[in-house]
Image (tube, one colour):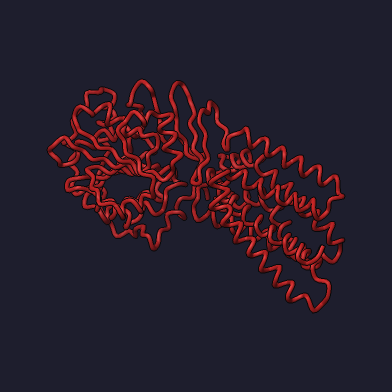
Length: 491
């Protein structure tokens, strides 16, 4: 085995490092969100593990047979990486349980990352000095070989980054990306040290078991799961309970859409949207509605079935994730509604379209961990305002799981753009807050829909709305938003 063989090994080690790094952040995102905290914890944990691995590898390279040591670390890293898809779900569910409610959030995220990925990544780091020791045959080769190995390791990491981001995670998913790295490392271990039968057997056994489990189990297990898909953006699931279908994004609290085959009125915050067609100042029947964040399309169904005889609706939805649209069509009856769905980023669509709307509903805030920061800034609200026809209005739903840590600042951000902002809980004691924005909002325009339960819910919401006064408090901007730092459920 000459130095070019070891150059090849270190290249694939670099590939594996970034496959695991990017997969680690996506693996924990459904449980912790995808905020700067999570990405910081992922990158920091990987770098810490690599640093310790470099140090240990340097010490071990002088004490043990280099080829056996390299083979052992390849098998260990493969085996422990292959264990991740088997253990991540119970571990991460425990991490977000109430038992750790008093622990600072960043410690929970970092602790979870360390438990899952420290050993395989530390072993990958330890291989660099071991490979250098094996590849260098004379003192004068040290500099050139060291540079070559470092360059190929970095080049492998670049390739692994593009491979994970643009190929494996979108095409085969997070768990299979981790298993791809595990399988690659196991194969390298077999080439480097083929005679160690115990390592070979145990590693390929665990890799095979993990592959088999990944093939037959959803990413997040739920009772009565009827639809499941992993997309490049998130994990989309539909489950059935008491005759109702629930759309759930990642491991979020609650559900993002509810579908009852018997009625469009389902007792959720969506029912409050029934007031919106009355609140615009247009005197004709036409209502052009834009929904940012499709979900299951429950809002469109409500308008169409309950108020379709009163208004002429033109429905458009901007949805980033085609998997959500697929769930809405297959499980929530979206195909039965006259809806135009545009798969695009909301900011890009608002910035590039010339269309104007009477009502814009932003329903893209999943929970306090998953508010896209760029959908909560002054610039975003300005783009929403620019797409409204005269007399139009915008509506938001915000879930306050953490009290006042972010809600008040978000309201002030909206109030810095729109002349009139009103907000209030959807129902007494509800964590869902209903927010209306426009040039002027006259709630006396709201008329009964003729559906007793729906009118009762709308009346309750109307009684809880109150104006938001503009203060001197700082607001969220594209340049600077501390939204993610405020969205800490613990600590």
